[in-house]
Image (tube, rainbow, N blue to C red):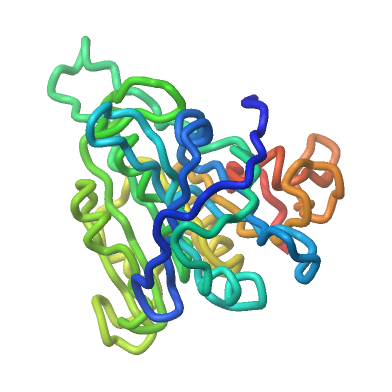
Length: 287
């Protein structure tokens, strides 16, 4: 496990990319060099005790220096929903925020096909299923899967040849980062509750309209993840989910982010911040 870093860092950009949705870019080379897709960071506004605690945000992507090609900055995409995110949206370039990370376990790699015995095999078809603001961990993951970028000091490696993003939102005004995913090479399938963009319906209904994937990763509201876990079980497809559990410390100290997991004798609690946030969906106890 990578030892988390903690620094007060300079904000390079803080731009609105959809309704109530912002992308903040911070200069943090040490973090950018070590973080991997699926991990998260805790962000806190400096010199303030209200709010006192930081908030968890998934890695959206790292930013490379155009001259050296080395990662030097980190992008985070967030939805303005409360006090912290409302204040965060007011941060201007050259102001500072406190960040600690990388935290969490990151996404597992899909199974690698035996191309020696089957040269025609192109690798598993990956479905990334997002609801609400759940697309945020998937941009770096897309680039990593398709071999467009390496993360955590690793060289780029092709892990599959096809990634589909299934992205469900309430309406078109909340669609954030679509061009980023298309530029990264993902096949983007949108759905909306009101039919204003993409398929008229929820993201699980949209997923059912397409060929069955070989590997599923989900992130979004718990009811969506529960439905996704059921879909995966019904179709015998491996599925991992990134939980959006509220956290206080991000380091496993406070035990405020526990989730129920299956054990040989029943169930037990695990901490989302250190044992997750990525879990095998079949191991979770869905109440």
